[in-house]
Length: 42
Image (cartoon, rainbow, N blue to C red; front, top):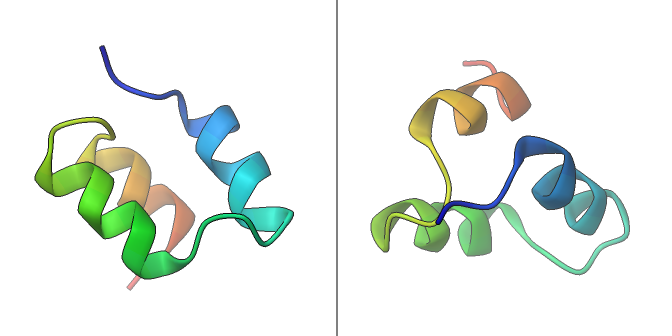
């Protein structure tokens, strides 16, 4: 099961997740790379 974009974005906006935390979620397949790119467009 992966975390939803809205869930992770809310935690990020509250300062509970850092960008590095979110990258770790991708590494353990708990967050999608597509959603990450949506949050942090390059």
